[in-house]
Amino acid sequence: MCTSIVYTIIEATGTVFLNTLTPKFYVALTGTSSLISGLILIFEWWYFRKYGTSFIEQVSVSHLRPLLGGVENSSTTGLFSSVNGDAEPRPSVSECKVWRNPLNLFRGAEYNRYTWVTGKEPLTYYDMNLSAQDHQTFFTGDTQQLRPEDAVMQKAWRERNPQARIRAAYQAIEMNHECAAAYVLLAEEEATTITEAERLFKKSLRIHAGKDINLLVYIKRRLAMCARKLGRIKEAVKMMRDLMKEFPLLGMLNIHENLLEALLELQAYADVQAVLAKYDDISLPKSATICYTSALLKARAVSDKFSPEAASRRGLSTAEMNAVEAIHRAVEFNPHVPKYLLEMKSLILPPEHILKRGDSEAVAYAFFHLQHWKRAEGALNLLHCTWEGTFRIIPYPLEKGHLFYPYPGCTETADRELLPSFHEVSVYPKKELPFFILFTAGLCSFTAMLAMLTHQFPELMGVFAKAFFSTLFAPLGFFADKMESFMPSSFWHQLTQI
Image 1 (cartoon, rainbow, N blue to C red):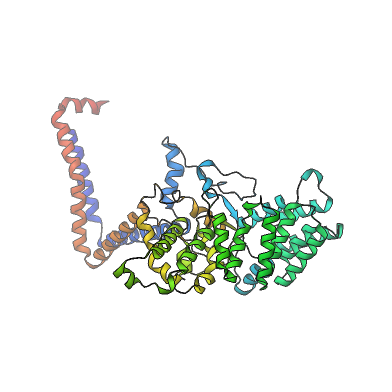
Image 2 (cartoon, rainbow, N blue to C red):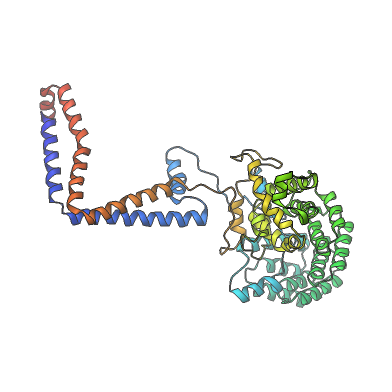
């Protein structure tokens, strides 16, 4: 009986409360709910586009899972290291090691000019910090035997302000007029033209006299790149070949990629094939330059006469099949490149470091090699017709690759660190929308519909609201009746006396 009385009181109170609510209250309630859910949806969508994950999901995983006894996801901090940096990549993400861009531009003569024209910074702090670590490792040598000017230069590479770095270089030159590393910094950062940078590099080479192998290789390589940019391509090719012959053990610097690009500019395709035969080996780390240059050579042999209609009628010839397979191989290695080559996505200046198989590598490759694909008649048409076929070959989900290891899942995070914020990072495979975005979208749509109906038909929606709450409380009354039938009335009386 007591339960019936309690339920009757609750029901009566609820009825009085619902009867006192006016239609304006329902309009305000549904409108506010729609507004709040819409704001949550907008924030979730913005966060997903910027960081690639749901904010609600991330907070749940980061804060609620440990409270429930779960294990937090490992932080991504420190997963990426420069090829010359001190930090070692973890074994599970060794494929996400960041490499020095073999064709990186000059800061003073190229990157800074872009900033002057557009007002945008083409390099991220993370990228420049990796370069500073590289330069310290390359140029300062043994810290036990640092000369005063070397100590100044070691500090100069760490400076965030470009003008502070340049002032430190001049300070080192005042201390020792034969400080080669100081002239290297001035060539990289103060010189506003390639000609001026080349002059400073030559001066640095004259006073260096082979004292430090790392510095010597760096200077000669940059001189070769200056010659390439100034149109003296044969001279650049000779310098690169001599450098590779003189220092054959420095393959990790990827000087052969500079050589491949210069040979393509000369249209010396036989020499390009000879370089590929040496470096396109399974035991060496692959790169987009190796894979896509191999595809370009095979596509060039058949692309001028290639026709999709004719190929569908008669089938592909052996040479065409080889070209298509080479394109599929290249796309599997780096699926971001075709959109840049086909100009489906706008290019930006390449970063100073790249992530192999990532969007940063695709930007760097397309920036220097798009002209070579355009020069080969029909090559881009063949690429356009065949590149998407690669994704039918690769297993999905990407638990295993076809010709290479499975595509790493950490590339998006690293590329967002390497590429400027105004660039839309290419993501592969495309991520499905998180559950919470779909949920908030549905909630926003539902509450917006309720708000509109309540505004148009306030009386009718009030009746529906009362019926809904009555139905909602019905199980409580049913449960109370069942409890009363099972329990003796004396039990409830004794319970009330406690």
